[in-house]
Length: 248
Ligand code: 13P
Image 1 (cartoon, protein in one colour):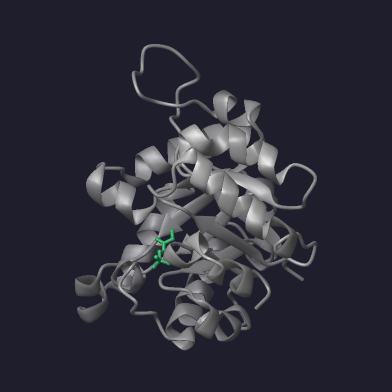
Image 2 (image 1 turned 90 degrees about the vertical axis):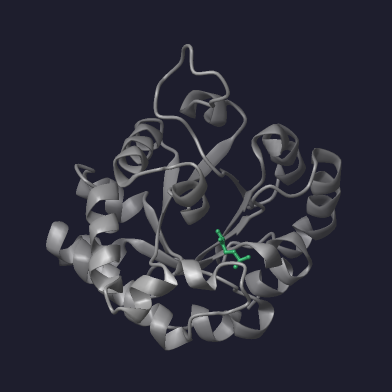
């Protein structure tokens, strides 16, 4: 039985004081062992949010990382730096990073591997554009992203540490949710790709989230689908809606 994982991706929202106040307000309502709950604030808020969730079951996630250990990489943040403030998950390859910051599958793969070296769980995002869905190429697009982003990662790590987030780009921030059937169909397909890359046992264990306009009104249906093991929540993670989603 795969434990559900619900992560809030704050994106570039909330300065530290506001984020901290929000976490203080909701933390007791999202303190649960039934699902893994992760909050992913911006880099400069990680340390304070780490303190704010201390003593709860809520985990800290980052939104990005760099794949080198240290050195002259102005503006970048290493895996050790994340670990030092208590980060245990990190989103990689979000479509916004792929789109605005030219992040490729190869870069995503390097980041995921570096995170795993330091025992931080990567949340690896994949998903098709509207054009790709309409031209019916979404399965090959997503398969390539999964294969290339997860290349050369040990199957034990895939089964136990890696989280895959299926986020159709056309459903992000648009209010347009994939139907629960569409979301499940792709998550199931991703699981089949993992089975082809590794084996059935690994595919059965890997956790696959859905992300894209998840809200209290659709969370229950989405989270009860056979192959959806959680949600990666954007806009709704900034309000009390996140509490309702966690308690779906
Ligand atoms: P929304 O929930 O705002 O659509 O964002 C989804 C997302 O991109 C989470 O990473």
